[in-house]
Image (tube, rainbow, N blue to C red; front, top):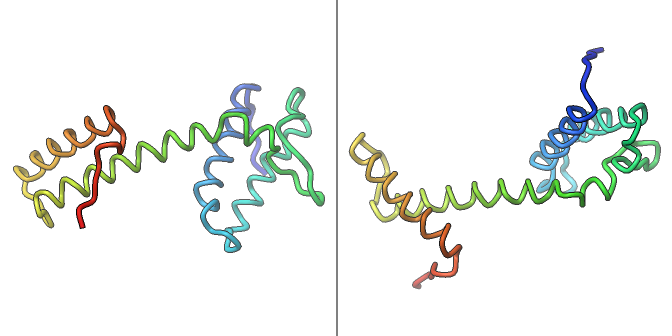
Length: 137
């Protein structure tokens, strides 16, 4: 068994990290969840049973300790959404820049041009989101 000392604040951050990790790995899997990650999340959240001031962070269902609704609705999903937005716009900017350049493999010069075009797209997304993005079929 591994043991390490965490401050209350550090433990709270660990809960966030475990929840986010399990969310990333399992949230899109439907019934095909990876049970090992659910189990580890439960083990970490079970430590709340021994921590003062953490009662609102967990629920127990069928003997399994889970993140509570209060925990999952307490702002953690805003952090996940911020990450998802950043990744989405980065990937979209790169794909659009590659499309514009008809780029499959890049040289050093192509890479600089790709980065320049990506920055243009990212600036546009920062300013207008997807409002000015249109598909022409």
